[in-house]
Amino acid sequence: MLSPAGLKQRSDFLQSLRLFFRERDYIEVDTPIRLPVLLPESEIFPYASEGWWLQTSPELCMKRLLARGATRLFQICHCFRREERGRLHAPEFTMLEWYHVGWNYLDLMRECEELVVALAVACSIFTGIANGGSLLRDAKEVRLTPPWKRLRVDEAFSAYTNTTALAALAEDRFDEILVTEIEPHLGWDRPVFLYDYPVQLGSLARPKPGAPHLAERFELYCCGIELANGFSELVDAAQQRLRFSKELAAMRSHAQPGTMPKSFLLDLSRFGDTAGIALGVDRLLMLFSGASCLDDVLPFSRDELY
Amino acid sequence: MYSASDLRKGLKVQIDGEPYIIISFDFSKPGKGQALYRTKMRNMITGNQFTQTYRSNDKFEKPDLEERTMQYLYSQGDEFHFMDTSSYEQIFITREHLGDNINFLVDNMEVQVLFFGEKPIDISLPIFVNLMVTRADPWVKGDTSGTDTKPVTVETGYQLQVPPFVEEGDKIQIDTRTGDYMTRVKE
Image (tube, rainbow over all chains, first blue to last red; front, side, top):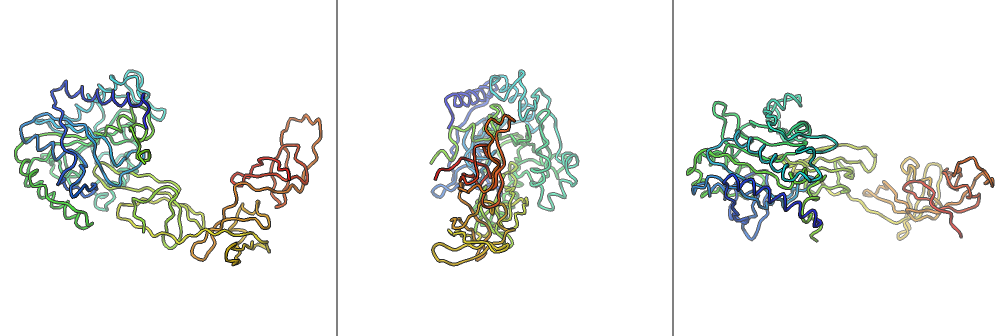
């Protein structure tokens, strides 16, 4: 359980997040966390709730609001993912998600830089922050001054592994190699954007114009830790339906329930180019406060609830 | 059956017909990717360690492990004989298998023997045992050489460092986890 001082830091951190987005004319929303249908994602397992589901991300509801004409939305909410527990995972965690109509993933990378820099200034007295805006971790100093490095997924594979992204994907070892051989190196000088994933790994991301085998998707890494996942949104409803069918087939093969999110697909055709991103609030707070695991920055850890 | 999401430090699972204990465990999952359970295990029979990454759909059998309270009876060559205190069944475990445990085994001592199926694979000693000192150099009063311990031998043949006042014939308490001297026991 957090001490009053820990709670105050968490509260200050959340307020700074809100201030950043309010100053940029984003509207804060609080969409339902219990839903009758989720976006089909075969590697994310939801908790059932009386025949409905607890959200694994606020993406579905937020995109439907964009379809009603909103252009800049953000949300700070709890998300639930079954079977995720560890130093960097909790089955209930806090997500920051934001969308900007008219932008693509490159614009979002820039805003990510600005967000983290602004937060580091606002939270400069936190234990994990020093020298006017560097992160301190494992006796290393990670400078936050932009621009941060942009590293393509194929470049990362050739720099840190002896295989390629496509070969790893074909052997069903992409995630394993990413986690064990690439991630530990990322974001120790400055944070790093890993970007341009194979299109199969961006179910909700737009294919890159001129390179349809790639998805306009990026992940932000800092101190070897994945902090955020953003993309240029796929807004082609027909293509999205096709991808969901594939996800649903994969889910059925593992006896995982799932349904086609029909109203989501209807709404998807009603908005133009948009970029969206989800950031793990607890993880960023963990880095800022110099904590070693997620539990150290949560008001309650799971074990303390009994 | 256990599934990958049950894996945690200390859990015992059966792989290829042998029991393993998980000695370290790390969950990782790239954003929207596969859950990976990076696991380091020790074979509970051979002591060999290995590291393996498991996925959500991997399943593990529960090993048939049972702990039984047994009394140490005697040793004959390299065989150390024990008796089940409830069924009076007798078994033996080899010296090689007992490893450092033999340093602290004295007749009639109660221990926990871990069985994998019918096979005894490990024993747990009491944390503290009292053993007789069988050989110790006398303490020279006024010795100012600066050493504050001296070596002694106990009844099992085990040697350890103790404070200088411990003498032959004394009983001393030893922590079996570390093999260290704890205190002198008055009986």
